[in-house]
Image: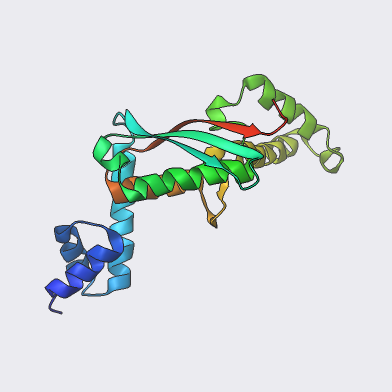
Length: 198
């Protein structure tokens, strides 16, 4: 099938990928746009994993105040260049993550920032639950590990389900932004303010 400039342009406007990448994807998929989009996404996500080691020292600090002014958020999100930091896509990502924090109220950024004593305390509570008493020790350990993962998914921002698409985690939407914008992007830190709470 002949790949036209219009087909390449349409794919580029839908994905944000480079012209040559779009042409190559359309050629590889014999003009199938949906397959080409999938191919570009896969390549972009692989590239995003390689970019994760690059230093991200630019970015933005974004605030979000929930209507009613009872919940507020400050979040710092970093990227590699000031150019990307000023793009609408990057600013929207920062705003969406700030809204996520206001809605889901995570306690920690990621599982590495959860203190070991908090994890141990949670594990000991989970081991005492009635529904696992009397089971073999290795089965109890597996059940507790599964429940600890659920605990992390509730209290860690990066592992939470995204409020605008429950099929994705915050880590996944950040990876997608890395693939689209072509730079390493890191959620660095956040502060959540709830009126009357310290």
